[in-house]
Length: 480
Image 1 (cartoon, rainbow, N blue to C red):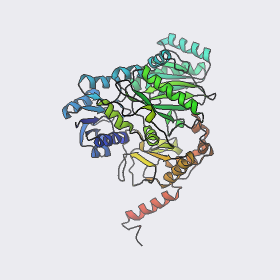
Image 2: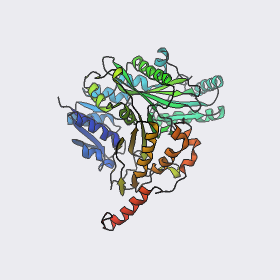
Image 3: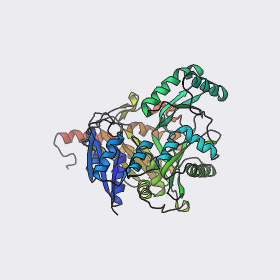
Image 4: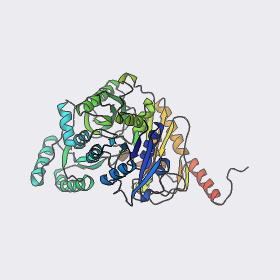
């Protein structure tokens, strides 16, 4: 039966969900704030509803979103990632209003969103974890707890917001003086970002690999994993490049990590799609970090190597279907890499380039190339949202083939108007360490030379600028 599904998000993930909804024969309802009035997701959906001037506040307003959903007569809501995606109150509001929430139940989001509670669940399930504290007490008593923990396990330690996620609310602390200074600031930051000033401490794993596992579970307890991903290439805890599967050569270790992820999902009574994240140290020990209770930005790489449509599966599970495949049906072939093409200037400390208009947009294509984006030629990038323009995901049957295809695609990818991360990635994929698959979470800071490039350095960019100049003069650049 045809259902009406509201997408409570914007940008590329809203488009991604709209396409899955329409492929399943359902009706896609988009919402938008005023800065998104020219956005592609509202042009692609079957219906679009304005929810306010924003920015961001209306996308985050639970009562408004639920009110729009009820007025539009929707059956379900997909939250995407970010915004309200991991807000248990939003999931609960959907449940209380008879609207299907496409994600895990509110109580699961609540327990796993509280990182300390999640650690307790994993500890009871026998899952290896980085040493950490419970929520630190308020005031001087909490500071004493933090100092005692750091004295026992040694510096550096990581201050983390209990309700954190997406790389926010994290501060690395190198000594007691810094701990005393950072703790009140961490509480204030957590309060501002998550409306919860609870924080806790974890021992830092020095330069680990960041490995995560995609899991999917139905309401009957059938739980499978879709293999591993490597998300080690990060800047300030924000992922830039994601790879599936992990490049760890020890297959037995990767299999064990994936099996542990399934155990973690079952221990938390997980339903729908989620991601279990781990750190792997230099001695190849692995530790549970968290479970993200939403579709990940990087779900594309897993789809490319498994052939399984994760968003389509999310929707079907939420509408009461069972998993249509078992663990034995999941086969991983080749490699896929996702690069986040952001409107940022890497040579200016990755400063966002919002407010600029895309004058030329020429994307790469060909075998094994997937683009998830929302910009188009003539689109003015809003200043008030994140800087992600398009995710480029490239597949190859071998790692070398994938890297070769990445370089070709980056050299063929032209976006003029805003500065982007494309030339930075051109350097990155040619770096010998990347080509060997040799990287951990220190990669960006230890490869500072990657910002040494000239704008429009590639032949593709030079040609695009030439064509753009001629085009604006009213001439045909392809005329013989």
